[in-house]
Length: 291
Image (cartoon, rainbow, N blue to C red; front, side, top):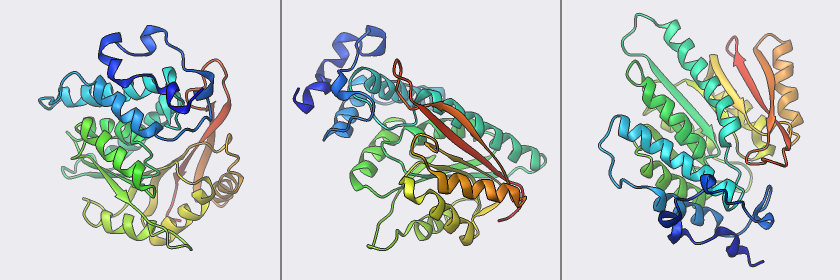
């Protein structure tokens, strides 16, 4: 089967009502852990064609627009081509952890009128998790100043994710940061640090790690050393079981033994693996004191 055939015809989305509700199943060649050229561009075309209202009027309409974008992405991934977004199942775990962090922040400063909350995401990909978390931050923005910084090294992914953020009407909540690699290391810490200077606070309240699996531990250590991880920071790391990220899990477990953090692994399935569930896990770590 030619690679592009598994994407279907994006121009027909409006005619068939799209998606999961139509009972369409993706071709086996586009199933779990399948990768083909131009998948991200095909996804973006699908999402654009799925949007009924080109210019929401704000407020609840913008929140609904973000939900519509996420639904369109899920539809594409279940009926056309598997992709490595966090997906609905792990998305619920991520949102629950984020809501807990938001609640804890408010409880720590109940009388303050200028509370800030900053999320940093490592690995934007196409922006699914950014939009998912951004929607929760927008809902919380009535009581605190919230912003999400998402760092991505792949230029194509960064461009797609920025357009997804725009389609979701989340530009005021989410900033996509382009990072680079000089052959030895990335400039992640500098780029995130510079962006934090423009945020209401210089501390990372919530960190979501979902980028290069070999860099989970090293990048967390670099962020710790830079001083942006503090007591109260919550860290969520995806794919720790499926990708076998033992050095990261071992590190946070040792930190737990040292009394620096509390950490646990939440079992789940690989995203969009319905009918062929593959075990995965999300590590949730809370800093009990400054590292």
